[in-house]
Amino acid sequence: MRTHYPAEGVLADQPKPVPALPRPRSALAARPTLSVLCAMAAEPRTVREIRALARTLGEFREMPDPVLDDLLLVVSEFVSNAVQHSGSSTVTVKLVFGVGSLSVAVRDTGRWVPPRPVDEAAESGRGTRLCRGLPCVLAAGRHHPARGGTVAWAQLSTSSPTAA
Image (cartoon, rainbow, N blue to C red; front, side, top):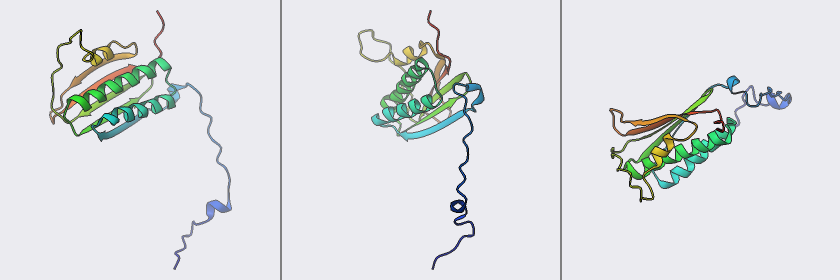
């Protein structure tokens, strides 16, 4: 026995296309804040997947290439550190795209491991320090919530840096 719903077929009877509203290109002031929260397993593939998400969102927001490059480097570094060094089972990433700036926060629930002194001969160990020096990064740091884990964060300008 088939149940009939009163609204069934209403849209099929009147196929009127809804006109799309014009969207001004590069009018960031007209766009609302976009906030995305994503939690994933702390596995090596997560770095690639979160970077792909950040790229898609940055392109959707029509970010200039230098800003997008800095965003991808920051996201890669913070997620990679959480995956490799925290011992956490999950990594949570929050990206907030606002007008003129965007923020990145990567949280793990693992144990805090103080950074090693930078060994100039080593192949790794400079990523977070390099992120702080990127042209679009306004501020970056980390803190340790009372409930455990570490939050690495950065605030980036969405304006392309000018050439000196």
